[in-house]
Length: 320
Image 1 (cartoon, rainbow, N blue to C red):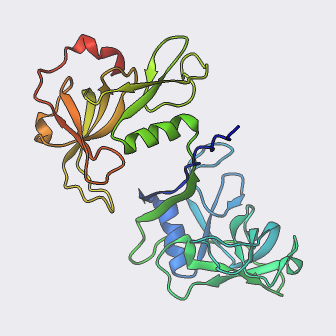
Image 2: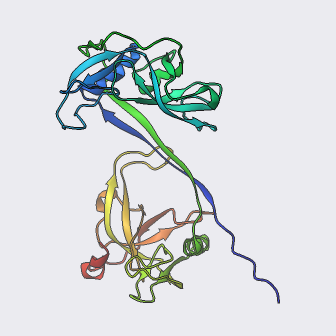
């Protein structure tokens, strides 16, 4: 008896990346600006504790705190873990230790990297000091890393600081990024293979009889496995939509444009897609649309109006 070949296991590298922009209050602004000036600031709580990195509210009492103090650039490792394989964007490109360092004068520990030749050179209680970056911009990366230090703990107490600097840092942009490999299961693999043939296939729940697109392998309502495949569409109805006014990085689409939830004919779950072929301000709920494929495309590039009369609200209200 001939064996049946196993279906191809689909895998694809995916990256989710966006710049996260935030403004800084007076405490965080002073802390980051201080790093640019090779000064480490903490904040003193009402009961006399010094927190580094500083926060704007006492984590115990929730009281607002603004009493800034300067602490030393030397400290003690309180705990650590060895990083055998540094990843992209980490402080060092050679193996290093992640360490929590309680700087002299502080009561809490700061997380950063320790440049050490190997795990045998790292221990709890070891003395370290800040290695400043050659070029500093007002970010936590102004501390390039920590390095071993043979000196004793600073004896002097923390010194009050106004937090005033020339040209203070008032905001930061952090690049958030997630790299991972996506492997769809049986249901989504069938869905993706069907799309390459310009068909849209969902799966019907054996209990509630709803057809889900894209299929998930199980009914999200009933919790039972789905296996019956049902071809839907290709036309559908816009159930709701949004107008995008901010241009996405590496996306060659002029703004403004419309992204919509579309209930394909025969489906009981709306999928999202871009609407084109119509002015953005004429897109509306109930608009009838159809997919537009590009040469060699494995999925619809966008949806466009079919020219049919708008669907009655009662026909899609459960899918809004």
